[in-house]
Length: 427
Image (cartoon, rainbow, N blue to C red; front, top):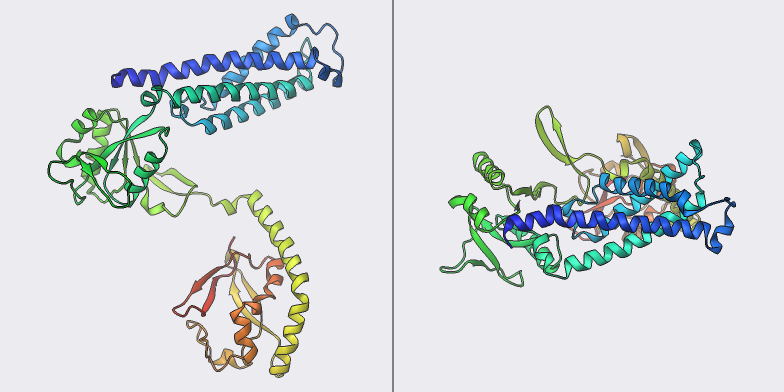
């Protein structure tokens, strides 16, 4: 099938089929909800409604269909990019049905419909619609994903550049035959390896099969995109002069090819990337960390409090025993070692630990040097405490106070047994 026909099927034909199917199935779900509420034994759980005939409720059912399908469309359920994204589509169906149920219930409390809308009917209708749509959408997905239709729905994808990101993407696309993106091949950039003479495939030991080489971007990118019938170009490296990047983008615009990049500077993050503008300059970055959200902060604080209380109770007998042993070996000093650290919000706090060194050790301590295993300032008991991190048991109190979080990062030094906490409070 020519590319124009495939695009028409993907962008218009199949979404319209799904829209028509969703409309019919939604009406069937609302009708089933009506039957369960007013004609089945379940209806006895609700308040009796006199003269609850289907003819009287039909206008409300049709209104419900229009609102539901309209909500699905507003959520983007009929975007062609979701044709092979089964679970993302089902997630939108759940959101739309839940939102419709809440709105329907809210409106019924303000506007007195005739006939009245039963709250039990709304609950049963939402469940029926979701169940029927799940079955219908699953069937539609299987038909698209496991028939020749899949080839015309997938976006032919070319990877620009050759490197680790290219191999990762190629392996991911090769792993799932029903992925919305179908790998068409690789377009190389200056500095990338070229295929062997007379071959049009790139080979790599880390990949299970060779990847088709579409050509070099410096030759004629417009022709490569056209002959390869490319729908999407993903750049896996951007270490190119600014003018060359602009030329690549212009080629994509002329060929009506979508353009995406792999932001290598942010590969440590799996989510949270946002694009915003500062003036007229686009800026890509992590706009909101998960831990800054109120719900996440509250949940984490509750977990910290429960964990700290449990830790204090369970470790109290051991701490008392260790304190007695420390006092016996080194009577002159305090049992607890206190040190000022910087916590969340750059607030200083007093870190508590069981003392594992002689009382005067701090006078000769170097803040930039970790304690060696054979440090003469260590108590006999201290080396054992540090080996098993038992000197940090009093820090449950710091966690309970909110000074610290249990997931403090540890920075290892050149010796595998020497370490120091670099971020005691992570929020």
